[in-house]
Image (cartoon, rainbow, N blue to C red; front, side, top):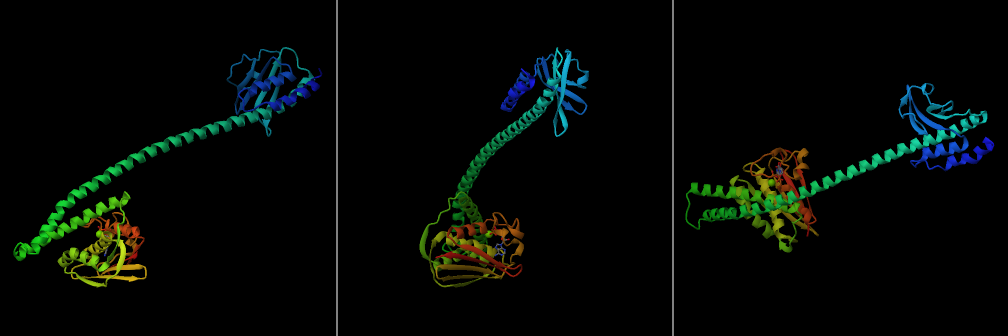
Length: 384
Ligand SMILES: Nc1ncnc2c1ncn2[C@@H]1O[C@H](COP(=O)(O)OP(=O)(O)O)[C@@H](O)[C@H]1O
Ligand SMILES: [Mg+2]
């Protein structure tokens, strides 16, 4: 058959080759053989100063680098050479060899065929690159997954350790609170003189024991409460109660601390009713009052104000102590943050964090008005 007719019949087979298949180059060689009969076929990739034999059909040549095509002994009398190009850049060389001479028509057809092969090989290479990239991406996804799983495992471990820590704190705090309550209780008894008169010195020392006990109890309670809040175990036990009674009780407990510093406590509150957690309401007050006493110098004044307007109760604790610099007014509400009082004795840096959480638990909030050197006012609003 006439070579042109044959090529017209065969040439469309090139376009049916699946370029993603591993056999795609073999199929190209097949289709080419159907158009121009050859003994061996070669595709060399071109590099700046060498060429490398990449694909072959019926070849005894080694797949290695060569300097140029002309230097290669193909062991065959006749050959056709075509350059494979992308946008005029030669990227490969296609060679076919045969014992008999190639006709002029075959040479013309070969140039057309090599153009088609050029674009096919280019696409095969692109496919290879894309599939390599996909593979690399999939591998990195697997790596990510692995890393994610490790992190997940670590997190579980951390959570477990955290729970052990919380349980430990809860236990130890409980064990510490029991003897402390007797220290405070018995010193109270001595101070009350039920057991007989005390010398002024004895009274002073017993008071010191009580005050230190109260400080310690406060700190233990703070640590215990923080661990309860963090583990989500802090729940409200709402009842309707009188605010006056709740405030008076707290003042009775805390007064020795104020007395010790000769701080005057001014009470500006009537009797309101509120639906809240009695013990937590007292705790809010206790925390704010003990701060006010702690951060107010001797002979200072603390004012407690409690009013109800509609469905909202406002509790204000104002002192004329050292006040709080603007730059600390937000951070002091964070866990363990103590503003300028870092490392202060009898301090955990937890009081305000707990107080804010307790207010939030009630659906309320706490705000602060203060200027350095001009005292501080903490305002708690709670829904009634
Ligand atoms: N009434 C106050 N006057 C001045 N500074 C205060 C007052 N209340 C709290 N602060 C500041 O806020 C910080 C955090 O308070 P808190 O959380 O109760 O922790 P702690 O009292 O254990 O230090 C305190 O260390 C102190 O610097
Ligand atoms: Mg405090």
